[in-house]
Length: 408
Image (cartoon, rainbow, N blue to C red; front, side):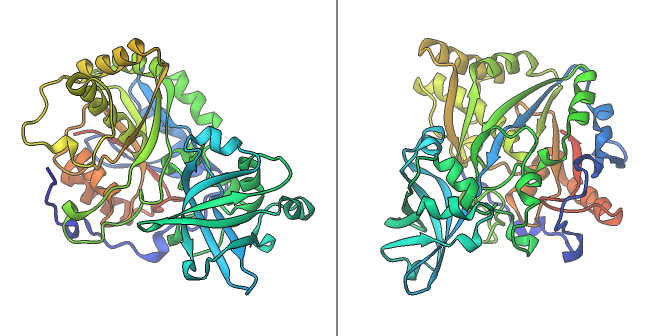
């Protein structure tokens, strides 16, 4: 059941000058807005541990951003920009990135009308500094077919390196368009979390960009257990809602992976009030787990978590612990050590949070699904919080400052 919400109610004035176009020199120098239910406070991010619940569970998304933007040129001179969204053949992320001669990706293509035949890589647009190596790849891209607003593109190359290595040498980091600048050298390290592990995202899980070894050590010293999930962030995650009614917005599915060992640990913390999610992507992953467990109970196996699934009229009688236990049992019965699934989950006011108690997150665009997620988490107080942030010099969006929120 789609939820009718006027997105114009989630507008706020964001001056261009308040958008952080570059990161601060040190990750944990960023500011932290603390919103735990009382007065708002402005703090330095490096001191976040002192505001977290002792002996909690803090969950990070360890996806890794790929240099997804590649530039090619036809013999006519026409420039073709190809934005790699996700593996198509082979569809498994790790297998695809390990391919050493060819693979196919689902992509968005700039100047699509000119994309005919095989096109060659433009090395002038590459950030790899080994020109001889770049040329030896002889990287070509061929349009295979069009699917809705995307294309299937086949990449072929020479030399035996993995596609992961080829992208590292040839691709550009996909920094957000609202930064209004080209990718620079610093983006290859700073538009990536320090703990990034599994390649696949085309946008960073930006809440994690503030964390350093120093901050992680202070969190562990508070008795907080740190663990990880993986959701590969798609290009649609940060898009504003275009129509007036949120019910008409289409969420793209994103793949995520959660281990059985993590689920067993999570089960212990559910209901404790001490589950801390780092970022909206971790939050969507965690909250999707409940519905996967419900699938196991109602259908015998997990499936895709659909966009409006949480909002069905009859509601859900299954408790969160029953749901996660069912998901663990499904994995055990099928000798699986992890669950790989997809989610289209949209979190809007009216959503029932079942797992996440605290949320670390940046400041989001007006009229975005991420701002709706925040409003669902803390209620109408989001307006006062964002007004406080604007009045107190906080920096906004991907390279901006952070906040720590407690669920209402």
